[in-house]
Length: 235
Image 1 (cartoon, rainbow, N blue to C red):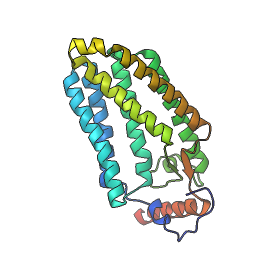
Image 2: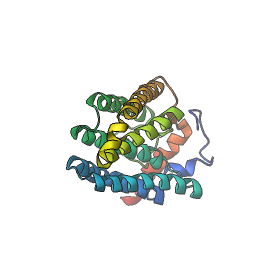
Image 3: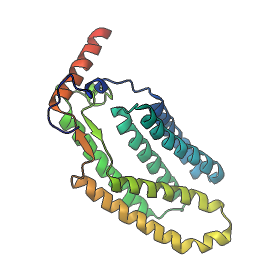
Image 4: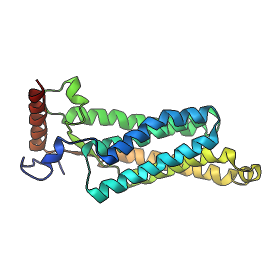
């Protein structure tokens, strides 16, 4: 959907006031909730348990996308929550791995710096597209969407590479010592690749790569009216 006006009776309108507790969204929420435990396991050096939980977390990420496509249960909340859960996992894991000395601080700073810039940009887009009145409760209400988030193809590749980075850094400490020594040079080259794609994808976002699609004026008006109506029904 683009930023042009969309008739209130068109097919996208019913999704504007949506049920966020779909199975894909529940899996996303569970993945987000398990992230602090995963970080704790890494910090405490329980790398075997961390590998298992990281695998389960990655599996839920695959499943929620597959179920959403199979059932056609796409939601605006999911378009925001799914990448947010990925970023939360990435943030916690790179910090925990850096704390254990398993990732260089410079690479961690690069990854987090890009994500912070994108978060600030997302807050600006949300404020810009939110229907009047712009209140705190309306701003953070997931049932009142004003834009959908669509990752660029390069960003998807970068996210995949970062997840492999986190997985590799978590797994390497429990591999045989000879393997750790033999993989040192390829691992350093891989970290350089992650750094390059992180910068490149970040510049693509900030340069107007089309990461956000604004809902049309009519669509935002429909969402605002439905939100107002739901509040009146509860009163």
